[in-house]
Image (cartoon, rainbow, N blue to C red; front, side, top):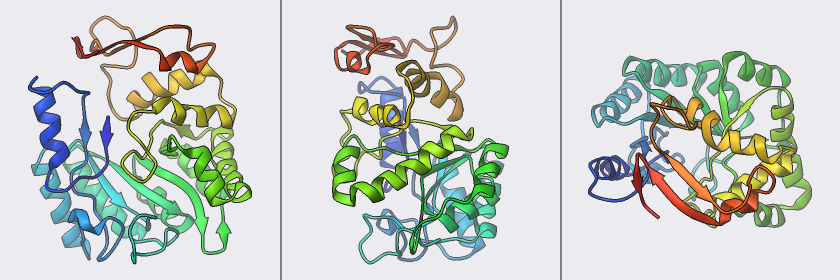
Length: 285
């Protein structure tokens, strides 16, 4: 499980507790405190910074906590009341390069929350590792920029649509036509060779932690087959996140196993019939 933002190192401590065998649970990749602007998206997690020196300092403090990834809020977000609009860029490309460079010095990847087109462009120019959401929203609607998509592919940047398990309900609330325009942007990126990875945005309204299958069904809506989706949810996303010891049934890999009733290669609904969960050789269910 990749946790892209906590307060006071909560997810880091939970990661270490699980790894020590004191609690059952998954391996956690923890980002610690997200980098955001003054009053910016998720400012309440404690990561407000302004200027290159403050950015470097926060990235270093996160690294000292032994985080697994650096999270930066490249644009505004929907849950931060009175924060910048969701389409608004919070950092310049040069400032995001500071995040990427400082993270690289600590051997860390960078995940950029980016809804707005200008924030996506800046994140791509800076060379982040993953872009979360990547919805191409601008002040007047949506604006997918072909040249930026090409650069995403060329740089090997992975895109996580962060499809909520309630993505169908979101479409109804957001407006079916607007939602389909947004979904078409993700579909277009896939068709043009962008590396998509799975994620749920769990923790925000209606994005629950216990219905991953519904999030995977979003990829069916994009045109992916069940075998393609299983690859995305296992080895492909693991590889994109730098996990080289899991995702396939391979000698020497961690024993991270999900056993279900039925054949998910034919029908993803088989994933709902969970018979056994094993993480690092420990049976949890």
